[in-house]
Image 1 (cartoon, protein in one colour):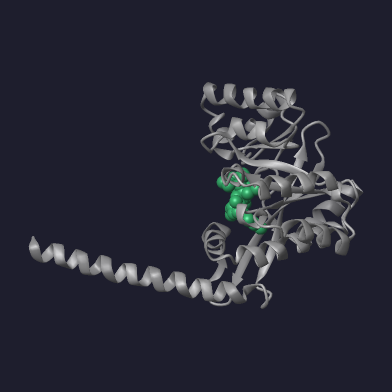
Image 2 (cartoon, rainbow, N blue to C red):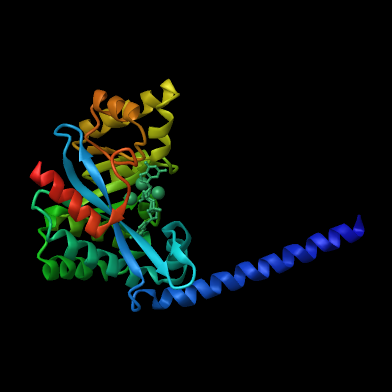
Amino acid sequence: AKEDGRNIYRFFEADMGVAVKDRRELITDLRNAVGNGELELYFQPQYCLRSFSISGFEALVRWNHPTRGLVSPADFIPLAEDTGLINPLGEWVLQEACRIAADWPQHLRVAVNLSPRQLRGHAFGPVLIESLARSGLRAERLELEVTEGVLLTDSDDVLNALHQAKSLGVKVSMDDFGTGYSSLSYLRRFPFNKIKIDQSFVRSMAYSDDSISIVKAIIGLAQDLDMSTTAEGVETKELLDMLVEIGCTEAQGYYLGRPMPVAEAQELIFSVDQA
Ligand code: C2E
Ligand code: CA
Ligand code: CA
Ligand code: CA
């Protein structure tokens, strides 16, 4: 048994070594990813539930790693946040999303995800203004998605940056609503334009009446606060029908469309335009 324990320990140690090396390598590679053109934006359609037409797309970053293949943002965004690389990366995402959306029909919006760190300090305002100016995208067509973690930092910088964005006409959405510890108190601290109802609530509506009640309550709350609602993670027609029924504003999810490369998004926009 003693022998076993040592082996397990050795195995564990070796494993940790790999994990640390892996992380270090990924960070080195990530440093060059923007410059090497390895990042790409995918776009997932968001549908208006009144008109049943596309109202915009959420930009989701992808990393085409030269040897590892496609790396998920869930694996590299946290690394980018820890190392500060999120600032150049996030700047690239914002500029690229604005540049691409500027070519779309004028009624379509683009939503960009922001990490808390991008809003700290005083750099975000100028980056935002430059992205809009360079691309020619009207501010009203841009949405910034922030999670409640953004307001956790309790810094004036963050609130100032969000207020500046709003004063330019940019929309601000609260992402993953309901998953944090104090979603409700954040609604009081910042006047969001939109609440994105987290996938976990949406998915569980299929088998839980309590979840339906919660989503209904979120939608009612949003209406009272003059905010719109987007349900995320809509994977079935059944869920879509329920969301229409209870008055959700928009929906997004695999049933309606997966995140896709820009050329495919363009095709989708064009095919709908022709219909
Ligand atoms: P998120 O902002 O909550 O984005 C939604 C995620 O759910 C996306 O994963 C999307 O592909 C996935 N999704 C959409 N519809 C469905 C569905 O019907 N079912 C299921 N199971 N999943 C669905 P993705 O693209 O892997 O992104 C993961 C997270 O990485 C995002 O979560 C966001 O927090 C972060 N992220 C992605 N792009 C960026 C970025 O440019 N900047 C920052 N800061 N974070 C980003
Ligand atoms: Ca998002
Ligand atoms: Ca989300
Ligand atoms: Ca999320």
